Length: 58
Ligand SMILES: [Zn+2]
Image (cartoon, rainbow, N blue to C red; front, side, top):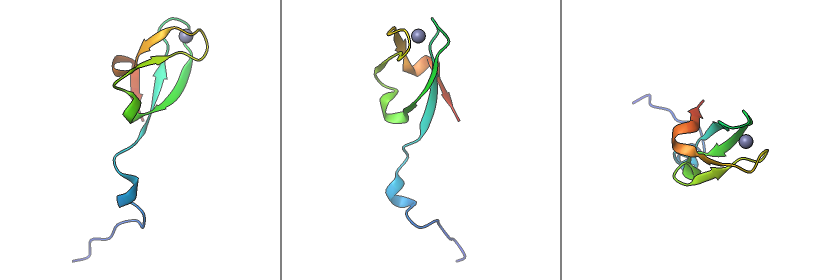
């Protein structure tokens, strides 16, 4: 078998980053994918953002 993986790949799990965009002020910032289940708070205007619907996977 010539199946090779990058070292450390397994410890990195399935955690990824995604970009959130605030629908109110247009601010974009990054969160981790394990935070998508909760409501995010916009760092610019403080509004609550539904991470699930506003998350853009990279
Ligand atoms: Zn905002």
